[in-house]
Amino acid sequence: MTATLQSHTHGSTLVLTIHNPQHRNALAPEIYVAGIEALIAAERNAEVRSVVLTGAGPTFCAGGNLQRLLANRQHPPEVQADSIEALHSWIEAIRSCPKPVLAAVEGACAGAGFSLALACDLVVAARDAVFVMAYVNVGLSPDGGATWALARQLPRATAAQLLMLGERIDAPRLHQLGLVTQVSEPGQALAEALRLAERFDTKAPNALASIKTLLNDAADHSLARHLRDERDHFVRNLHHPNAGEGIQAFLDKRPPQYR
Image 1 (tube, rainbow, N blue to C red):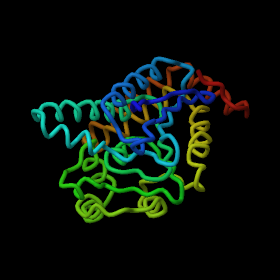
Image 2 (cartoon, one colour):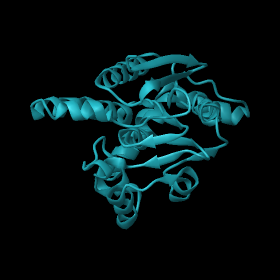
Image 3 (cartoon, one colour):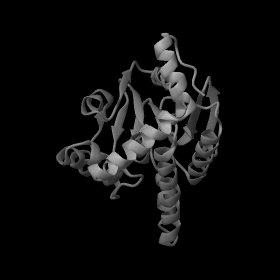
Image 4 (cartoon, rainbow, N blue to C red):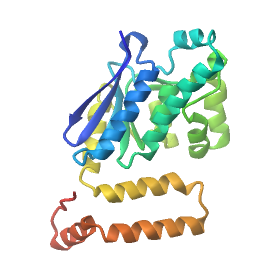
């Protein structure tokens, strides 16, 4: 069975489902390409306000396909490098997508699957979901931006523990650490993520896009540079029709209708 990325809409939310059940939703280059194309289409579609990434069945994503990795050892290094570049392009597309991207995690979230979840803006995980940076357990180092994300979100020793020991960590602990936004009952991660996405769907898309850009840029900018960026985004959003609607709706004590 070919690994695919299935898609459907739920209201104003685009749901992307990693579908490779024979291999616990292990990733493949064709999924990376489909993921990038889906996010580009979502960005261009004004009716899509948010995106949820999930896995088919009881598993979110087992990471890379070890059989494929083993086979790639027989090919020139450029073959694997090209595959990782495709994954990284998908990671960058998730981070730069102007619309909120949420992960809905059930079961195992391992390796590059963990990296995908870290790239999302928010993560909803089932209480019994298990996360693991398993690379070191098979003699590999991480990809997918895992070291970048964990180094920025956790104390160095905690990030080192996850990355260098390759131990499993459960969703409640990641919630305590701030990496998981919300813990759901088993089997309810997607439903909870969709409910959370509906809250984004009521916000002004241009304001959400600005906030996501500012969050992405904050770690690499000086305060002076970031203050200028905040000013520019604020002024641009103030003169957007959505600000007029939002302010008037607040004064009228009614829900705003953004476009």
